[in-house]
Image (tube, rainbow, N blue to C red; front, side, top):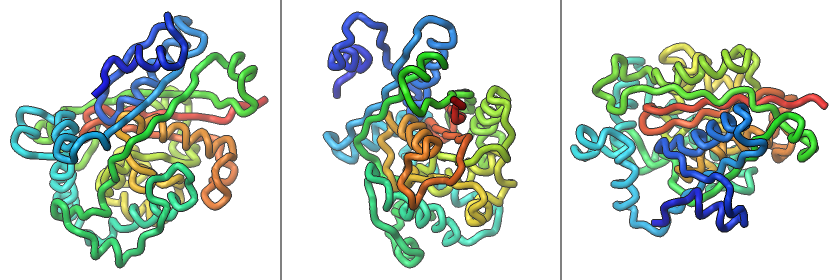
Length: 325
């Protein structure tokens, strides 16, 4: 229940007197904090900035947590009508299955792969593999979404230090370059969107990030996507431009682009207010060559992480690159 988190963290870290504020963008809050840290350094307002994401959900009942998270949707027209985020994603998945004529079982790939990667991640919530059979037998929680389509809510915290290139080289033996951290937005409510199965915020955020970074899709070596639900993973791959419309599942099955390399939200867990920074830390771990051998992306030099708030109303795409000595 603690609020005023900026001051709390500064206090507990022994940094009394520095500027410290809380940043909020629903599930994209952590990446939003990273963007503010980046802007502070770029503008010269700070030489070193610390972005922190934190979440503590287990002190609340599941009903309280569900109600609180639902407020990141349209409170008047979605949450008040009983639409939880599970239900919102179920509507998207139902429409996707209808429009693209694919079998629901094909979505199992996202969950099976995420758990397979999480097995090797010491920070993952679920370090156990799952099978196609387990996916198909999982309890339905909001048709057509079953329990294994949904990421688990979790407690957690992550932090990223942002500074100038010169200071980064002084402070770290494996510094990385933050090429971009760009925001794209969309309507809060699904019913206000021109296309239900196109995440305009994802498209805008990705386009701006790639342009800012001076990169093309084919130069991205790994993608830490926001797989809060398996349908969101498919829509993200399509709206970012990595896959054609209706081909998100098939593209992922090809394995040409490593995604959720350390388990993603599904395997590692979804500590809501910290998730965006978990993604960036995991991308950084890959670029530094520090990931466990079984899940290390060989030769990775450029990584993308994408943090989504709500059902796509706020999207923040971050691109990192290894820094030459």
